[in-house]
Image (tube, rainbow, N blue to C red; front, side, top):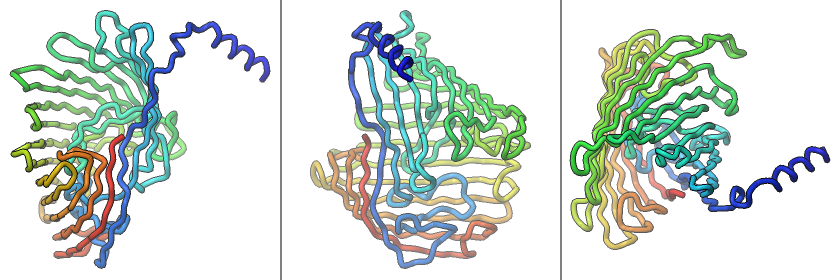
Length: 401
């Protein structure tokens, strides 16, 4: 042990001073914590989270029916160290999460990457580790049309003149496993982003391929089936506003290529998504999210074709820099072929926040929420057939770090 310690000191002493120079440490992540209260029975299995009777269509594997005061509490907390050395910029991020009260604490991200390490391409970042490698996220329902997290590496944002290319390879992580505990599913992911087509308008394209190693593990044999995803996104950015429109097709999968369960034996899923933010006046702004997915995957909950539709609107009125009122309405329905399940929610929230815009955090919410489910197909969802409603009240905070 003494020899190892001595050699370590010797190695450190030979490094140039600037390679060890501290540039910055910062906290990063997101958290929401608070409490709710409902007198009503759970609307589906374990629907009451932190006192909130969460609204979600029975049998849905897509998204909650709106985001405001309609989810469990929890956090993702990360510590990022940055360096600016030898004309390059490096960062190392270590992030843990409680998966928003859904699981014990575990690693969410742990990677290192450097940019301006390719002399001819300063924007390109070379990275390796565990990362949210490829995510596209809708804020109002927290749905992710693309959700490919894992352990691997690659290069992001290589400038080719008319856009930026990313090429990355990852392995999925076994549920509740360690970062090195591969689930045997792999993905090669490519994207071409920031293709300018007009003033303030760009296009992004995605093409991903996934497969399994087919090996026997302690928990069973890994599915060796292959799958792919292709998608495109249109981006329109204006002062105080933005619009995004995405189309994504998955062969044998929906949003995730490296899920532990593996792909479906057959079928596919076509998703269409429109979401954005509009600043209508100095006092009033609105966010919106519209989702549709048409799926005939053999792994569908109903065993048949599924058609999912959801719309969420959130309006915010700002009295001054810190006080506002939000009203969020949401409707969700899934057509299972012979049966249809649906849900709806209306939430009124009085807020105190850092500033006068919808993304301002920290923010404290005081809310009342009313919603319900209309269920034809029950199965193992825990929902009751017919119409069932619930009211929740409470308070919580949100913060981005």
